[in-house]
Length: 469
Image 1 (cartoon, rainbow, N blue to C red):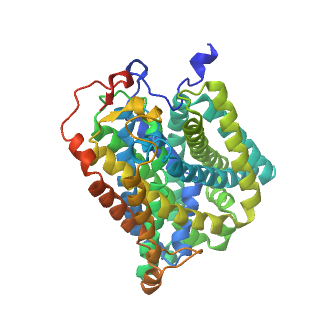
Image 2: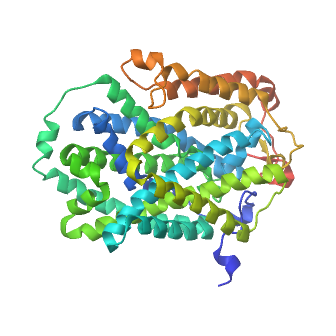
């Protein structure tokens, strides 16, 4: 088989109809595998750390994943409709150069998740093969890099394996926890605390919302006539079920394991697996490889979109993807090796920080797609600095800026606690306001664009034909 047949040939460019393939069902496996990772398990443990009991962690986890997963899965339908990666679509809202702002923020997400994934993936490899954690992280980075270089089709294939393995192992671990003598004690505590409960919902929602910048990257090769209900539904199901299962496992493990789990999350899960400890660690490795590969691939897309915005390029060759992905992996590895000892605290702060800045982008992007332009886009103009979307769209920046500012009094992080959040006892609701204000204001400020797109454009979904819808 030739190299061109093995490596993905597309990058940020439009995927034409004759290259579209696959079924929306494959999205379930991608997002189930990405969510059933050790990082999500650690996130679930934070529910208990923040002050929730094991009992009240359950509804907080489920509600948070549903709330965040709903908005995130709406991005998935943009892939088949537009045939381009998620973040390059931001040029339609923020302008050709203005989109660099959300792209830089997205790149921070990818690097952060990639780095934290390398920490936990390195632990799993270290426990399985009795090597140092630093060496484990390095090996993990190399494997993730190779998968990201091979690209879209191979990422989907690997996610099928990871999803099935994770599903089987997680069920087995829940059974083991059910028979643990400490489980009954953990569920005997019924005290409800509103502030940590609401903060927990926000934490789960933030986990889901931070997938937004690359959701459409993994649906853009689907045929343009793929029903939206299927694309959104399978993405939502995989994300919410996977994320909820992983976080529930983490919350229960933290409640019954205490310090033993918090000091070595990967090792504790391996011990919980008993005689099947190696299979548990293998599931941890495969699940985390999926997440890290998505982060490497998404980071590559962000960097390339930024670079092409400045250079005017429209196509990036596979050999260049190798260079970009390798550089992103090297940066994430450097962060991981430096942050290992303070991982849990840093990760909590990282998630909450990103939530404040990415929810306004998500709201603007979704409002533009569904209600302002009504899925009618000039694909070729996404690659043209002099196109109809302009270089900078002031309306998007005003909506985005106010969407961030309105959250300040409601923020609750280690960096800053807003006065209203303090008055609410630490409850976290800032992200809800960020969504509503940014999305609503962008809709109002885009009245002229709405009138222009008030009637469907009959043009076919090809760049040369002006419109994709």
